[in-house]
Length: 360
Image (tube, rainbow, N blue to C red; front, side, top):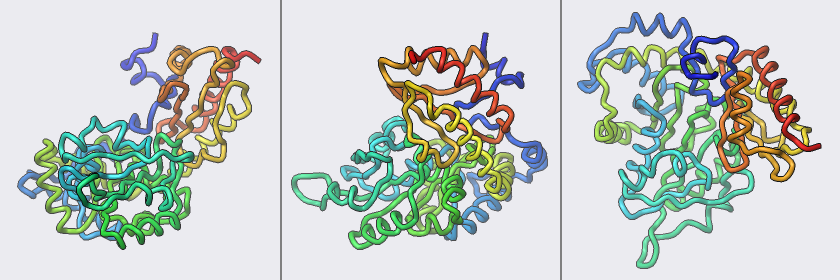
């Protein structure tokens, strides 16, 4: 029987639940053991300083802040850019809306207004009808939040021209913009751009070190010096002030500087998985939307003979871990810890399991 402990000690398990399951590389472990540290709440951790300086440099920003999680980075940004009683706009399946425990309401007093899209891409034409000015009838719009890549959109990427129009129109209306860039290095890899260019017009950007970049813990928030100085206050308020955090920052430095170069490999593996199941009856998804390291497919009711939960259970019994992410949806995520051979084995098991449960 599968248990988490067994998974941790078994090379036969192919864990495709998320890229958050990646383990630190040997180089990261060595750097963590040797890291120079200090008390970061006092601003005295030199390795944290190096990581924050490097992140700000890569994104061409004045400053950066190390935070324990991407959720904390996003929620600090929302607090920075809004006042209680205002609205922030987001896509209807955005992480800030569905997976961050209503913290925008609890911490910032801010209402998130979701915008439904057919392809998980927010364009200016889709955003504009939902923008409201301050007045006596409706909450005014303060912030636009975008997600690139879009997790629940299957890892799709918002192209630069779409972003440039949003930045331009937002500035004209004095609206702030924030990017949930948890996997922005994946987006940059797919689009053939550097992250500096892809994120240039956002007021703040959050990105994760602990997903495809393989660090054990941590995310970064980048922005102006003024914004990041205030963000430090909100990090402390959320319990994110850490002491000798340079041990984590040491792994983060390797994640930031060395790991983006290998993300295309994860994208290739996701494509392998997607192509393996694309023509199966009872399975629905758009192969063209598999752009990065995420594959989300739907089981067609009346054709597929089980729910996502039962499919995930059946795969688990055969050593493949996947996630049920909706009433009909299953997600597979490729990452550093599953090589091509593992993905090929997983693809075969997924196909066999699906065809044994599908009425042809």
